[in-house]
Amino acid sequence: MLDRYNRNINYLRISVTDRCNLRCTYCMPEDGVTILQHKDILTFDEIVDFTKVAVSLGINKVRITGGEPLVRRGIVDLVRMIAEIDGIDDLSMTTNAILMQQFAKPLFDAGLHRINVSLDTTNPEKFNSITRGGNIEDVFKGLEEAKKVGFNPIKINCVIEKTSSEPDALAVKEYASKQGFEVRFIPMMKLDKGIFGQVEGGEGGNCASCNRLRLTANGFIKPCLFSDLGYSVRELGAKAAIEMAIGLKPESGTSNQSGKFYNIGG
Image 1 (tube, rainbow, N blue to C red):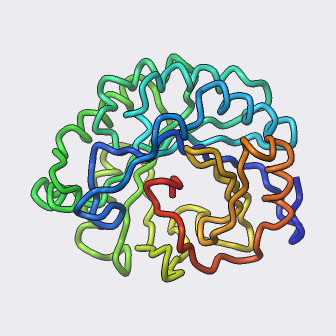
Image 2 (spheres, one colour):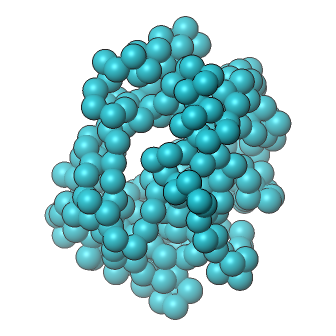
C-alpha cells in the first residue's frame, strides 16, 4: 500500500491494552491514568478480523504493543490467532518483560517471532525509580527465559535523554552485548510538544521512510504517532479506516494533543 508520498505502508502496530504493570516516569503520570472501559476495548475477534483485512491490503509486519501487552488476559491466544494469518512475515511484541519469565515459552510456541524489551538502565535502584516500583531482576529473568526458549533476535529499547554515550545507555549496551542482544537507543519524546527524533539502531522517527499504521486498543487507526488523526474501525469498517489513514497519512509528524504513549503503543 503506497501513501501519497510513495511510502510503502506494510507495518501494523497493535495496542492490545492501555494498562501496564509499571508506571514509567516518561510514559505515565504519577497519579495514574483513566483506563478504558472493557466495552471500549477491541475483542480478540475484532483485532484478528481487522488484521486479516490489513494483511490482504499489504501489511506483512505486525507488532503487538500496549500499555504492557502481557497484562491483557489471554494474550497467548491472541498471538496464536494472529500467527495463523497467512501473509504475516514478521510477528513481534514490545514488552517490559516483567512477566516474560512465565510467558516466554507459551508465546514462542504460539508463533511469536521476536521481542523488543524496554530497559533504560541496569541499575536496580534507578530502574525502581524510573518505573515507580519495578524490580529489574524480573526483567533479567524474563530476558534469560526468552533467550533460552529461542527468541532471536532479542532487541533492547533504551530511552536516552540526549545521547547514547550517557552512563545508563552505555551500561545497557554492555549488558546487551554480553547477552547477545541488539540494542536501540530511543530519544526522549514528548507527544504534546512534537519533540521526537530518529531511533539509533532502528528506523523509528524517520518520517521519510515511515511504513507504519497503529491500531489503538479502543479501535482507532492512527497514521502517525505525532498526529491527532485517527479513524474508528468500528464506525468505518476495517478497509475504509485503513484507506483513510493511508490517504491522509502526513508527510511528517507534528504533535499529538489527544493521545499518550501508554494508549497508542509508541
